[in-house]
Amino acid sequence: MDPKTFRQHAHQFVDWMADYMEQVEQYPVKSQVRPGEIYDKIPARLPEEGVAMDQIFRDFQREIIPGMTHWQSPHFYAYFPANVSPPSILAEMLISTMGAQCMKWETSPAAAELEERVMEWLRDAMGLPGSWEGVIQDTASTATLAALLCARERQSNYEINEQGFEGFTNYRVYCSTETHSSIEKGVKIAGFGKQNLVKIAVDEQLAMRADLLEQAIEADLSAGYQPLCIVVATGTTGTTAIDPLLAIGDIAQKHGIWLHVDAAYAGSALLLPEYQWMIEGIEKADSFVFNPHKWLLTNFDCTAYFVKDSRALVNTFAILPEYLKTRTDGQVNNYCDWGIPLGRRFRALKLWFVLRYYGLAGLQEKLRGHMTMATWLEEQIKASSDFTVLTPRNLNLVCFHYTPQGATDIAALNPLNEALLHRLNDTGKIFLTHTKIRGVYTLRMVIGQTSVEQRHVEAAWALIATTARSLAEYKINK
Ligand SMILES: *Cc1c(COP(=O)(O)O)cnc(C)c1O
Image (cartoon, rainbow, N blue to C red):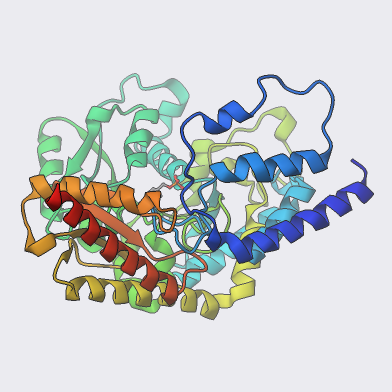
């Protein structure tokens, strides 16, 4: 494709992109296709001859779009958001046009030095210790795996990397019963064995009980295990519960255990001074991860990983084959040595665009707006006679269920609420997901999409209430 043709298509696509942003709330937010429907529309063989871009673009609109769930719709309240924003999209266009591999300083000095700076910006704005260093990873799952590997190597004096596990066994990793599945995945990949992930029970607020953690560690020590790493959840995926970092930090320090903080979603809220309480005690931790690609208006993928001592990262991951040796080794940061993959996209650029375009004040306003709307919703639910809030709200996630006539029988309420969730999602007007809290089927509503406004939340709440009441009537009459 010559640059002239490219220019024409690009202009056409940019028009489509702006139209999409304007119209996204009119699409069914959750794709309504059946399994196999899209697959069956795609020809079984790759085309022998090239196809005109106009044709490809038409097929994209006709065949692909119906199979998309619209994560950028303001009717999206499911999981956690994967927000984009216009400045981030514009940066992505530039990043993909340059297509640079940003593994070493020399492969693009601007990428390495901009990454160093924007990580410092975030570190300072989020109240992380000023001596810590940051690096961008692809996902929180990867960052947590990196933390587990660094903990392993520091504990074994970097011997497992050299000779394998011979003589180094019995490692234990601790997290609460509510932590994200990526911890278990990391424990498996790092070679500790899933059975050596100790899940600590939680309190009423679904936060880890530090006293039970202490007991588990003491018991493990007397049984001959080696406590290696504790993962604190700052904002669990189910309910955004906040583990007590200060108390857990004391335990980690007392026993010399690596302390990793998983704030994948909630970390963005640290830009607000009123949420600094979430990381009281952070100076006792060794590593901290959060995802700008969730709530902070930056396209997936972009994970910010911060560490107390970058030497542990570099000692664990650095490899220097002949073809990667450069004149500047030792003077600059080569971020391929700060994580698992060699190749790295220029992710710092989109973060730089977002942070500069909105500024701290603009981002704070966005986050506070989400908190205000979530507070409003929580108040509506509390004031209604037939819905119940299930866990105290920490941020912008409201957890609730439908309890007609104050019903409390879980055996009847769980199927009713499950039916309600499917009924709502099938309308295409709103998308929610669920969790279970102590066996109770719970609707999760996250109010954090880039473009969600109060009018959307009001319409969503009206839809939830009328759908629930019609469903209960239908069930009772049947
Ligand atoms: C979303 C989430 C993760 C996983 O994030 P990825 O970037 O998709 O790997 C981990 N922990 C928590 C608490 C999360 O909410």
